[in-house]
Amino acid sequence: MTLPQCHCYAHRRKSIVCGGEGIERYCARPVLRWLRGCGNRGLALGSICTGGYLLGKAGLLDGYRRSIHWEQYAAMTVEFPKVDVSRSIFTIERDRFMSSGGTVPTDMMLYFVRRQLGAETASDVADQFVHERIRDTRDLQHMPLRHVMGGQSAKLVAAVELMESNIREPLSQLELASYINLSRRQLQRLFQKYLLNSPSHYYLQLRLAQARQLLSQTNLSIVEIAAQTGFVSSSHFSTTYKELYGNTPSADRIDR
Image 1 (cartoon, helix red, strand yellow):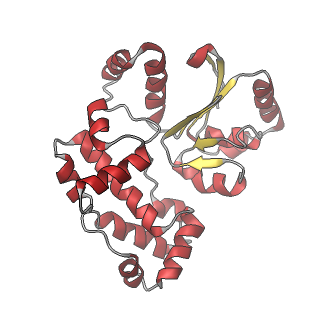
Image 2 (tube, rainbow, N blue to C red):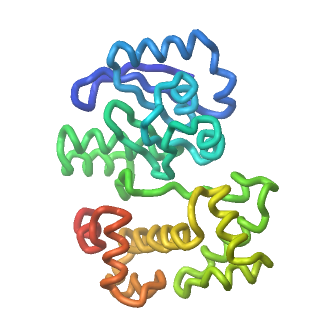
């Protein structure tokens, strides 16, 4: 674990916790005390990968929305109920900035570059890193449920795999429940218990995430993308897309 200082966003000093495997081993009192001291001095606090676990243990994330690597997602939601754990690849909220890990710190760095130096400079920096698409806080990280759930709920994993395999022609909740030998109510309870979400909303998020990839990676028209992701009309697609991502599909395509 390293705790470097940097100077950037809004010219405030920052402390960044860089995590990795076995982050729990670093939850020693001196480390947590040092982090609390950083918070008390008004430093902006950030984390990379699983580093947010330490900030949570130090009580520095209560009331914040935060991202963390998918390996720690379940643990964070259970252990820190006052923290709003997000599936976004990174989150920026007030004096906290948190990245899920992997290649995402590059996207978060480019966010700060864009805020301070403009979109053209951020694009030039991305080109130097051979970084083809600059993702933002609206992008969600894919969470491999087989790893996250382990053996806890094979039926939930099966349901999500069915959803992922039926994006163009979405299955109804009754069909999903029937395929995995559950009632509709049992299916809803399963999603609520493990994913804090309803089956219908989770399915919608999967379809919109697929649509967003098609917008950035293909030249398909909005109408074609709507059809490819199971929407009966482009207007309905655009409305639901904007509700989730804050931009219309056409505006997102222009931004990229």
